[in-house]
Length: 422
Ligand code: NAP
Image 1 (cartoon, protein in one colour):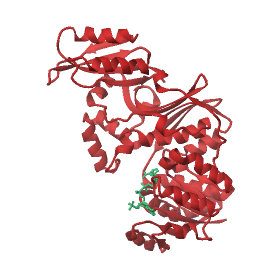
Image 2 (image 1 turned 180 degrees about the vertical axis):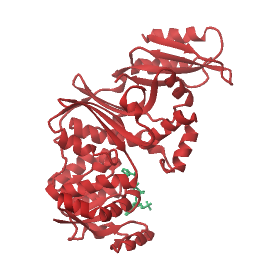
Image 3 (image 1 turned 90 degrees about the vertical axis):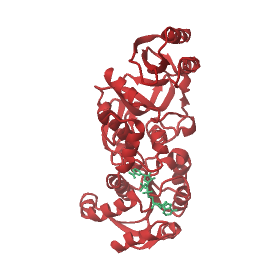
Image 4 (image 1 turned 180 degrees about the horizontal axis):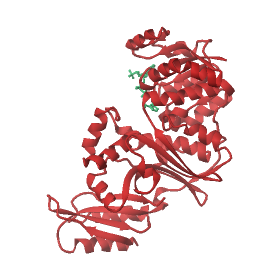
């Protein structure tokens, strides 16, 4: 079977997809009896025409030419961002073409709309590459686990932030040095905000929530905290306590409500997710009846991600179906109502009575302390005070820390990191 595709966006993933289709064409044909024919390539940058010319492939700077080409069966959108990607996908579906996309940001914000359009026009959307790059997670959940109930998702879904936290711990460097290093090695973009503030992780969590729990959450309402406030001190104290700090995406169904959140987390060093090194991704699923499952692999990189894009092209060619889920109504739990153990760090002036004052405020919010340690004096005459709490409601923790931060002896905003007992 021959499938004709047009690729819009010749960046990292777009170029790698072209190379992989050419390199592995006989393998794909042998395994799936599908011949992928690239009918056209598009990029806004004229200079990318040279890349197309290298493979003797037609090139245009106008995406509409591919979308309106009657010879093209599948449009592969690899430009990223919300617009004009959304317009291109919408027009492609209306023109009777299936779509493959790696665009997590667009799906997180407009997935419901795009998927209902696909349904209306009876076309497929492939989005394997939108979550965890090369890891075949979407297919595993939607097909391999079709009979399973997912109770919880814990995911390290962003390679950039995992690389930064990993390097901070390994090289004993602070956040800004680790970020610079990640940018130098191509693991972080020049504008890293989407990654380090947890937005990219949030977008992927929204897609997984749709697949596992059958509902598109509103990304603006999901509690999201990035890693830019994590200091080397926190990483070192975590190690002392046998934990690693990871940026975690969490989705869990509790008493009929869905609890979604993205935040740095203390994870026991014995948990397999803690082992996720460098720029790798890992997703841990608690399911019934399949039990616990761990997916691990390269979450980014053009070449690795191209395998997910190609797998979607082949799947659509074979059965033309999408991983569409029927949406159900689900209530969401407010983050303020969730409870967790916490690591808290205060930077306090080394004066008598400070610890007692902090403890009194915590007690007034019923926050009970499991352990406390006062560390050696810092250069600025502030001392780190480290506490581990028992389970505390987020609402109480926020109020207590606001009061503590207002004390004259507290010189820097307090740090709080949830401890996830997996
Ligand atoms: P990229 O390197 O920035 O490439 C995107 C290309 O599309 C650029 O050449 C860009 O040109 C071009 N473009 C932008 N607007 C266009 C338009 N209107 N028409 C035609 N071309 C246009 O991005 P990427 O890293 O390949 O990522 C592509 C998608 O894959 C994104 O959705 C991303 O989130 C997703 N993804 C990426 C990775 C990864 O490792 N990179 C992994 C998983 C998923 P300009 O440079 O001029 O804007």
